[in-house]
Length: 484
Ligand code: URP
Ligand code: ZN
Ligand code: ZN
Ligand code: ZN
Image (cartoon, rainbow, N blue to C red):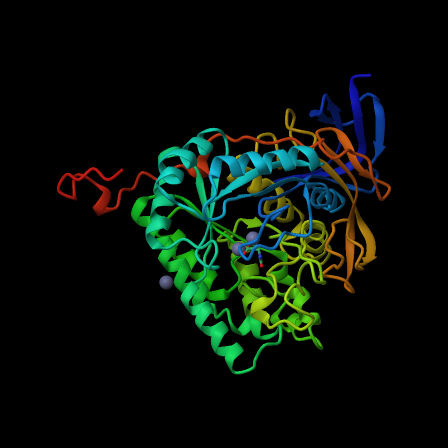
């Protein structure tokens, strides 16, 4: 037979087209897309099904030590297994440096863990928390040139945040070597001050977590970050945009030509801060940062996706169990400041967004593929990922668009709860292939831990400065100073 596998009779969808075709796979790649393809060694019947590119989730914390020293609940095996069950076939997680650690060794450690456990393909963001001379001038540029083409910094969290000068150092290092800089942007002083004021007055329940992250913290940090990005002409990606005003700041900056990408996550579109308001400590399960907001923020984020101000839908998978190893590490009734930030998201990202975008019709199927697979693969330069075209990796999810599911606390990760439990959604990824290997079929895992591959990346379009020099960095206007 001409093909290892033929996916037959389905409706294919990319970010630009929806059409009926068979899809032939040879040696892990898409070898043919056409009508009435000859038989494959294996045939997958896709009649009445949608054939979509596997999801690309470019923001997930896997087997990672948090800023407060807490290990995330998943290792690479459980996290990528759960991703695969949700139709996702590529992830970018973090090689997370902590203060005092050597970034190059950190990358080696994470790469070894992923190599052992990952079931789907993976790349790393270089997370810099210790931007000393060695890191900024030696290790970071070398690792970027070795193919880790994105860097992550936090503007908040005591243990990992960088200050303004350090942020400028990291932006400059990324510019010199060719990487996109991703940022968790919230004003640290404001969060700290609000958190302490609430706690001191006895407002310690999980719901006050949302009050402790004012919209202004996002707005201020976005403005500061964008000002630096614009000054240095260094592209950035703003992580997890959660507010209407934050989205507006991004829109303004993009409108004047600043090279900014930005993402939001399902929990900002489909949840509000009301999730945190549950009896007792139950709301801790929904504590994440930034917190869920209000319904007007949700509307603004949908609008920003529609307009292209936000280009990526990621999960921000940051799993902690609802027990003493995770959310309740500091006792059975912790104040909101002591609750680990984050929720599992790898498995539910695509199903809940498919339901909202395709089944309920908001923005539609092509935009769903674009935001969850094509754009993230393009912006982060993941080779062969994010679409259906001849020569690309055969990363494919076959969806039953009509299947109704009541979500339960039965995810395939190690978190033990599902923040979307209780909702009914329509649409489910039934069969998932990664590089032409079936990883999930009939509700069962088919691939082995360690079968995922590290993706090294070229410096693509998103990493390139615009070439518009600010007056301070333009020798023709700064009295000849060479600052790059
Ligand atoms: O609450 C979250 N998202 N925790 C993970 C760390 C981060 O801020 O992305
Ligand atoms: Zn973050
Ligand atoms: Zn503004
Ligand atoms: Zn995160």
